Length: 497
Image 1: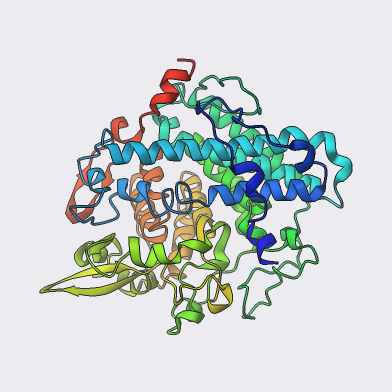
Image 2 (image 1 turned 60 degrees about the vertical axis):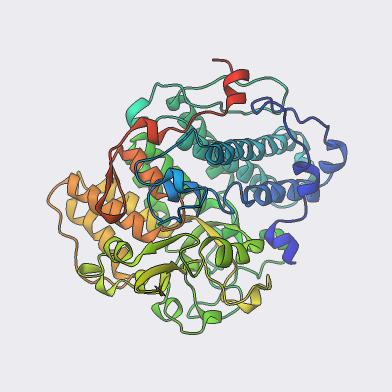
């Protein structure tokens, strides 16, 4: 059961190949499609293989969650010998060899996932007779959603934002599995393609099991106030829908991308579809504050619309990245208190108390990041309240999107969206804003507090072309030099430029 639920079974077929040119999407060695795509199980394995690939450390298993975008957003204090230090404060040395290697691997990893999603999409329509019930719709819908999701993140990293360069050169939007080099599309065109894929996915996922009233979101190992039914489906493939791009996750991705494009009407429509469904319950404070780590929910698991399963990274999170010293990623204690406004309105914020621990270093103190801390190095999820996952789309983000999209027409309702999230984080004091600029400032604060260590803050600064608020009172002026990563050299050589 574990292998099917967590998406491990299929990588051998899809992940063993590589590309000599990063936009030449024909693998060097042929995949035996006559074997892989002759059964429904083969398509299932192929789809799960894409998720498994995306959860590797070069993508959402590390770099695109706790890694490079968080460093660029100035969310960590970094030791002087660390390879990430060149991205701190006002350095942003994009010519540093360590950064070049990481960002090139991110590019390759994203397009590797896209290639494998395309392989599924090019085979599935002609094999509809293989599928039982609505598995054809689910697999095709998820493959389309994956293709859009991965392209969008590539765009957010390697191209100007829509606000500053809608008609600037963006990235390739690859929709076929071939040996042809895909042309570079404009930012606007890439967004339109991603939205088209997601709208198609949304239609295909209309009958997603997660939409049924009988599907109750909860923890995998315990019964809480609502009975968890996420493991009840007789088909292992249909269990734990929140570990994949389900119907509500697609709505969340649509809301995120429509907002990026400045279409607040459609962004709000999709955000409200998630909020109004009331499928995802706010995390009980007793679970978040539990003393016993085995019974603690540090990441608000039930509020996750979509998450990447990362079972093998417990030791890396606990020991090699967020270390109990100034050898890993951490915060100076004053910086942590400033981010969460601990001396004022955030004095009761549960996130700061639970996500950061005080570590004494001689006569000073640092705040150790505990957000992903586990009580055991075992991969046995039954030793913990929930699976080890990297959050991808949160319920709270949909509230933030709704607030931003509502303010112009209903400021009171917009602020209420923000206040509801804050209330469930222990902050009872209402936000006071008098204009849209002040709302944006509060939103960026909330993005930082809520999604610390999840890779989303850098994108928020970029989307709004806002100054990056750094540590120790520093401010990094908004700049395309910072917000747009250089394309890989091989892309520049081989792309149609």
